[in-house]
Length: 76
Image (tube, rainbow, N blue to C red; front, side, top):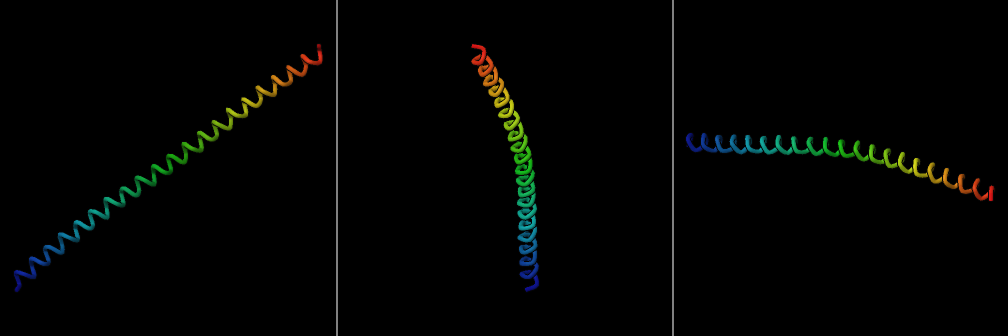
């Protein structure tokens, strides 16, 4: 009987250790995923900011062309 209890205790301890390992692995995976999400959010914000600047530059160029065309049309 004593031996059976010791075997069961060892099995339960092993199952506990495995569960703790799985928990630690899943926690590391969750933290890694959170870091990736944060990195991607930063990259997205940077790209949106760059895209905004590019659009503003295009608008300025188009406004300059419109102004030039308007001036030329007044001359002729």
